[in-house]
View 1 (spheres, rainbow, N blue to C red):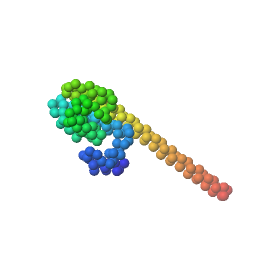
View 2: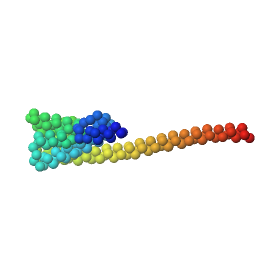
View 3: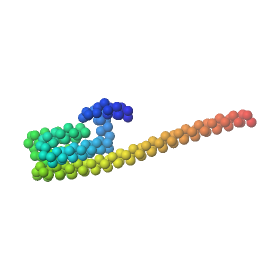
Length: 178
């Protein structure tokens, strides 16, 4: 745990580092971080599009702003596809978006719809992140309770064993003296 905390502060501002890769391998936390990064970057992209920022700049800046390398790679791939001449809906229709998000993006007909769809995806990902956050907190409480029960149970067991040995020792001393 200390290694994770120290590594976080030493590597702050970097896109990817070994400790982050280890943490992202934990299934629930990886999904939480990905959903949070998608929510933030999609909301930012939507705001940029509503402010008439060119789509190429929007995709590039969203990739730079993403906190998860997986999400940043998504934006980079979308920008590459768009630069190759692929349609916007097809360029945005990639993994790691889920099926419903991909279907929504595939139906794009004009640029004005992109911001609305990105806002919708951002809201859905934000809700998913909140749900996963609640699960993580409840699991932390549960594991803390289990850890405390094990600790208290082992302490009580050790005291019981010590008490039995003290009783037998005292019984031996009392039996010799009487």
